[in-house]
Length: 519
Image (tube, rainbow, N blue to C red; front, side, top):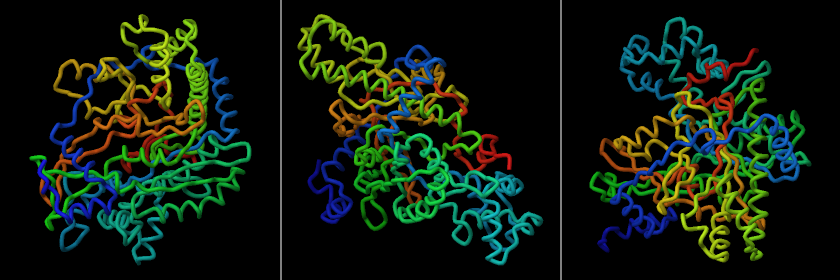
């Protein structure tokens, strides 16, 4: 590596972002090496990596969760740092295709999404807000609808002259309409938290990640709505806020893997993807933590099944954690009797999905004890999985590790060599996918917080091709938060009903039955 690869100005920029030079060099090496593919062994299926909770055990797991919640052990981590831009991708053509002259008659692209959107507008929860902001600007929404002024309507929805939805945090968009008003996605998460993490004093703990530059907007909104929900649900919220650190940004490179520089000659650093939120999660120092995407919420009349399964997953985690910690205490105390070592290895094989070297039974008791302690002394996650319904997203697979042993992982399709017939067949055979419905145990058997960075796979990166001001570049995304960032966790998959999964990836998803209330 040439010593003059970076200028003094480059080094000053790295320092201002909190990015060590050594980390940038590591990122360059990853670009040159290329994002390695994972090697799928087989899909996780019911009975082989995915557990189905027997109906007669549901009350037991719910009770376990409720006792732990009352003790103040549960909190909720809400990744809300994404903007709503992707939700409105199909409507952006209406703004981008604007031309001089009459905006009502200027042609639309072939995509008729703006027309469909405007025709369904009265059914969206933000209809009244849009009508009001247009009225304040001297424009009547009903008149615009009558004369089919689609572009004007879309501009008032997306741009700062109106509601400015295009660049709002996704959590601040209205998702559901109720008889007494409408709620944002963030409000629905507050209500869900009141049902699942409230302790015996009525305290609900949450941590919300915010988009850079929008923390104050999110914080102000939360402070405005909290009194209403604290009164309605007889609880108190303790909420922490953070943003994705600029120190987690990654260097962009050109197609030849050289540092990409903008027109002014400056290095270009880009956000490192949701895997960068591992830092935020690590700093939270929680105990038992729920994670769920900001756009996966249900209105009140459909919340019951989601709350139930949140409690089931949480209770199941409490039970697993108790067994693991009991065994770790014995291993830590030096227990090497054959019955105890077999009990620990049986739990690893039969419940936790751990694989052992073929000659493990021949190892000495001391070697077995040390190996079992290392394999069990790590964070634990229980992940809900739903049956494939054609939704995009990663899925649960048995993945071959660098040691040749398979482990349960959540895998994105971008991590798989789809040109390899056996890997393509493995993807096609998957029965479930990842709705991002996790509950985590992040403290060790002595109650100390794990350093979660120790259990990530730093090489499980995503390399994608992007453009910047018309120039091609390659971008590096850090290991996904529930993918490579949790690669070395103890991982359990549990089947959950599809009714617990109702994401809003496009604005039209708000018209699905699962987001509609009888008002």
